[in-house]
Amino acid sequence: MKLARAIHFDESDMRVYSSPARTGEWCISGGFEFSNWTEADLTGKPRQAFANGWLGVETFGRVTFVAVTTIEEAERDALAQALAQHFVDVYGAPDVDTALPVARDEIAHMIELCDDHAPNTLLTVARELTESGVRETFRMIEAQDAGLEQFAIHGSLDE
Image (tube, rainbow, N blue to C red; front, side):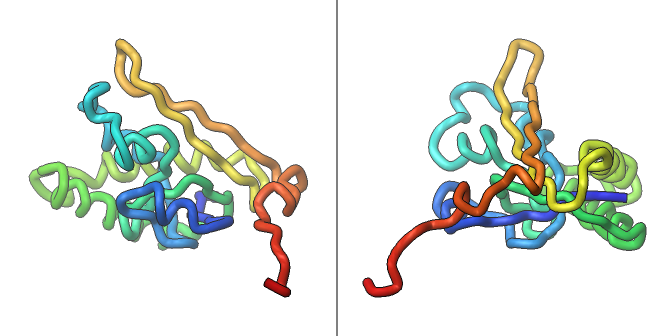
């Protein structure tokens, strides 16, 4: 079974998100956060989170890139519990038991998204508001296609 972890190639996520995800934490799409948003909500850092941010399920921060990797069943179950608690604490779910099936569905969606990809495949998300709600599209960058020069910051050690 596969899921995705937050990955950072530079410090940009620290600047563009109000609450950046921690490198290495498990992530899901997290599009549910934007279900009641309108164009008026799409400003500044919240706009960036909406447009391109995956949701870390430990810090509940956002990240631009995630990398596919293997997850154990016990880890998945712990993530579902944490996400269900988040639904109680932030979104007003009545209790963890009621929120747990929804949390499991969110994680299952991400597992399904990752399942067909090789480990270390990078994923990005793009969202837009439509008449029928939030539309998400996903892009993958295969590990062998992601050359270091795409992400490295070049400079001189003499400076």
